[in-house]
View 1 (cartoon, rainbow, N blue to C red):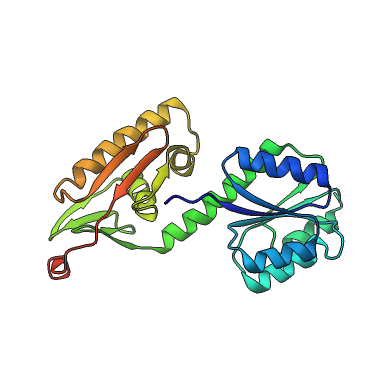
View 2 (cartoon, one colour):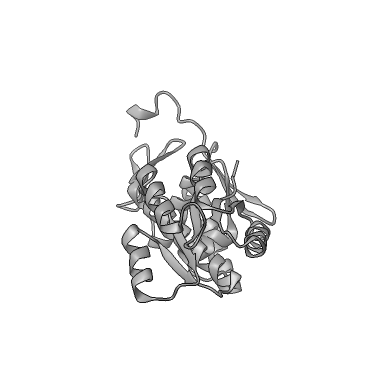
Length: 239
């Protein structure tokens, strides 16, 4: 199952908070809204959030304090600050705490979504790079050497093929959204890049054809899914 990105949204302006939550949900995110830092922190402890969007000036617990407490629990979760403050010292304080980005009010909601997308792609890309070996059915995929090994027969992949296969492996047996893949690898999801990605998908299918249990299938209107079965019990002796 390809779950939505979960966002913790803390904003004490009720109208702005509602608008932000509705906009994020319309863009495909799952967003929980809380009006103060205290409630936001309690929600963070209970939930599993992929990113936090925190207003700096909030009652009970301000955004900087909340961010520090969140960092004590999870040092890696991305944090975006929203604030009416534009003073250099406030911005520096935010980044010192560990902010991934900082928007000053008023701001464009489209810009917020764009920055969230960039942060998530960077985080996902980092996680993908940390994994150097994948098992794909009876294949072994070395992401560093950019090679596919099928029972001793090695195929060298191009950089784009390797990047795309890495994303598919990271989402194995789930839907890899088309726009996410385009923006992650080609940066822009325009028509020509989309056609280019289709060509690379075709190439990867040819590279993986020796194991009929492995498939890259089209999910109409959404993207692709790599069907990656559990490797046979005797495959370790062959790889």
